[in-house]
Image (cartoon, rainbow, N blue to C red; front, side):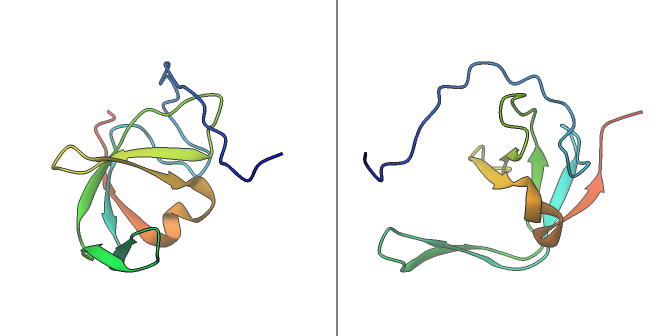
Length: 95
């Protein structure tokens, strides 16, 4: 048994609504600065308060993992359990 994280290949992103209620297409804004750390714990960058990201479709196998994309095209994931503590939903593209 190892302590290595388990990785799963995801090929289908069909989940339109996450358990916390955000929808694919929603724009969300960071509520506070988000430091990015290297493996040693050193802050190497900071995503600033107010930065706007977009929610992407997720995977039905892991609905608790929210997929996001920044304006520069970088994709990120976030845990559904604390998503609304860190992001404010601004608007969505739903009718």
